Length: 441
Image (cartoon, rainbow, N blue to C red; front, side):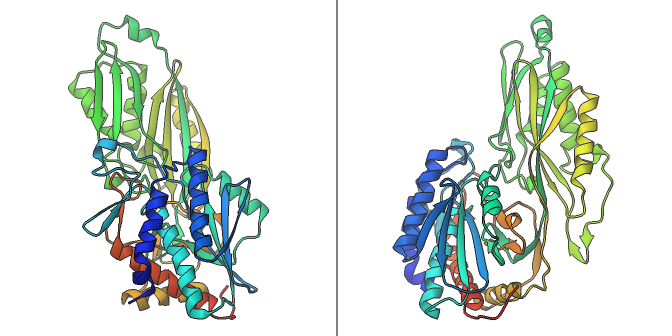
């Protein structure tokens, strides 16, 4: 019986406690509670812990050595989305058919618990570590990285490492990230005077990195229209259905007349309906670099709302390694100019490209192959992770491609089998990396 199998009941119990804390990123009290809870789990397993950056980042350290293996996780989560689409309480860990359901089970509380037990298992095997291992626990990964940006500004980065916040095999390339806020002035006086049905307000979206599962529109005659889609992680919008685009069909069916608000809404649907933003007139770029697949730029309207004077839209952008962020800014500035609007980049993270020839990646690859019996390869991560926080970090697991990835979705889950397997993969990797004093930079 493996180490993970022997400890699976304790792991599930600890994960249950973590999931029960509704640590949505903007609820700083609950996020703090989740951080305190995972640090208590670490202390129970025999590790020293501390909090830094005004209590927004947790540190679990073990071992000594001239090189540091960094493992970055987070305990904040995205909002649960539509409660009616959950088959279980999102903040109550529920086991069904070998699966553990709950918000954060996959992203990223389940993997965080797995890494803690991984460190304990590897230490039991080796007796001592010949490298320093630093588990860094963030609390604002799902929003603007106020936690990790402050941490990297104050502390030395790890020499190399990974974040269990993606998929297997190793993702040595990661797209860049931008949130762009568009603001268009609107005149609501026309809605009161219009003899036709026109839009008076629009609302959609729960977070900048989630494809909205619901969009509502209020019309001048008091009618409330609701369009439903399927909420998914915005890095791969094709896996869901954007309710904003679903609303476009709903407006057509109800013969809603044009007004300035609908003009802008139509423009958003036309510009971003394909996900690839062809209407932005960005120069096409190759999808391969040095033989590695880097994909295309992806644009997703994720949040839309109206105020008394403006229509406000957040567009989430995942840009490829060769794309210039300045070109994207320029394209959005031009788009807004045509409609009298303004644009602001509210969040930005660069791309990641780590050479697959790095020695530490070979140890990780060997660990994956030994535990799974599958051949390792390298891949592009479509999403954004703490791998962007430091040089020589990659995202690695917990999702086994091509299995279902329920990050940011209703009914998020991790299977017990996968929880055991990822724990064993990470344990073997730590044993290989921290079991030698040889440099792996």
